[in-house]
Each structure stands twice: as C-alpha cells, then as structure tokens.
Image 1 (cartoon, rainbow, N blue to C red):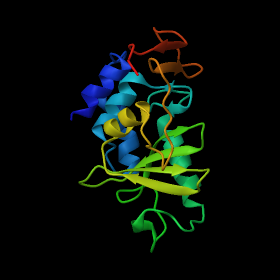
Image 2 (cartoon, helix red, strand yellow):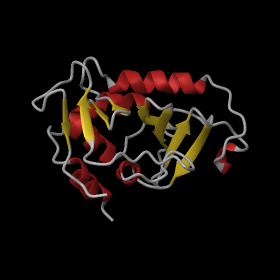
Image 3 (cartoon, helix red, strand yellow):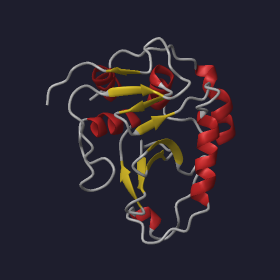
Image 4 (cartoon, rainbow, N blue to C red):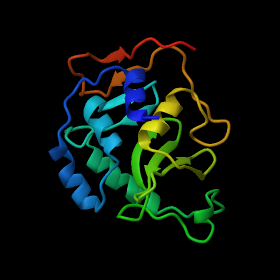
Length: 191
C-alpha cells in the first residue's frame, strides 16, 4: 500500500509547496537524510498540531524551528539513563540518539510520546512513551505509522489507540497561521 497517497486522502490536499533546500542545513548537521515522506509531510502541512496532540514543527519557520527542536530533543534523550527497554536491540546497549546510526526525533505529542526514526535500509519508527518509560518499535515508513495512528491503531505501544472520530483537526501553531486560519479540518471520513 502506498501510504503517502492514503495519508493525503485522510488529511486533505497539502496547502504548501515543498522546498528541498529547506532541509539541507538540518540534514547536513544531523549527518543523515530524514525520510522523504516525512519531509514532504512537514513541507505540506507544518507547523501544525494534529488532533490536538501531535506537534509538528518546520525547518524554515522562525518560531517553530524543527532544527532547534531536533537537536534539543537529541540532547535531552542522550542524557537519560535507560533501564529495561522493550525492543530487543536495546537489551545490551542503551539507545543512541542523532547521527547516522542513532534515533532521530520526528514529532512529539502532549501525551508524553516522542516519535523517532532510525536511519537504515529498512524503514523503522520508534516511539518513546513517557508513561511507560519505554520504546516501541514499528518496522514501517513514517507515512504508514502516521496513517495508522490517525486511524486509531495501537501505534504508541500496547493498548494505545488514540482514535478521534470525524475528520482530522489541524491547529496552526501560534504565529504560524496561514491562508487556512487558526484551525481547519481534513475531509469527512466514516467510522
């Protein structure tokens, strides 16, 4: 399944044009390319909050600066002590953050979750859930993860469904209101 197309159908048409140059400085400093579908989502919709709890920033926004948030998040997570993490790959070594081999943050929620991706040949998403003090691994693209999350599947650990009925709600982050205003909704959906 082509999840980017399905995600756009769920969210509605993008309201901004993409600009690959926006990503050069961030990816150069990170030493890794962010997932193409993530970059396209951010360029198309961010800075925005989805369904009142997923906060997406943008590398070209003066206030909601993705680069600043990514590096602050990496620094914060590198300084934590990790005990008894669920993914098997973290049993013998603590998770590493940033760089070409480490976890790179993509989005956070106001429910204490932070979504990371791990660079590599296989798409891999990790979600840190603060209430569990644990990571959960999903072998899928960012588009698939976000689509399934918005459809109400358990995408932040066991029994974590966060389905909100009706169309997806978009809230422009303060200072980022565009031609759509302070908030808007995606297309109607059935459930």
